[in-house]
Length: 232
Image (cartoon, rainbow, N blue to C red; front, side):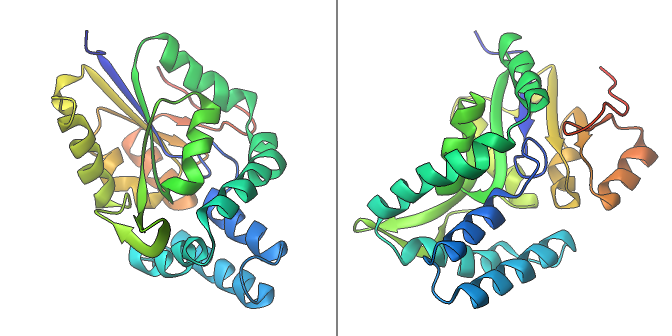
């Protein structure tokens, strides 16, 4: 039986009070695994600022972020990611975020994380939340190594709509098949997908998204402090 409701979750600064892509790059730089640590951290800061300003393409981010994957053997990356999860990600997961996800799962909703961050970084995080599906930017993998390039359509801005539609189509479904479709996000970069679901929710919203959410009377929640205006 097909779930009647669809629940989609952005990850960074939505379910997590941090940016996993930024934190992964910073973790590699701090531990001497990203070349010149000073240059790597400066580049990381630059990309984060450009993302927040809405002035960053997926390809520009990938040149640095996916380059960090291509520089190392997958076995080393996997071992380092376990430490990253233990030291940075799991301690940051809040009970409020877990409860939100669990509520949708218990209702039988079809749930997925939809994130611009690459799947290598985010797949273990989605599992930590118990979310069974992940739509993320895919890092190209050939001959047992990451290439540093994007595979297919990046899960970013309008690309999130493309990727969600492709995922649903693979199950013989479409957005229109759901009586209710919800997308939770903090970012103005996610406005395209927020505008095509039936129930957009601004979570820990950036100032730009907060302005739009208020103007359009969208529900607004904060998973990291107090409930603002959660309309069911």
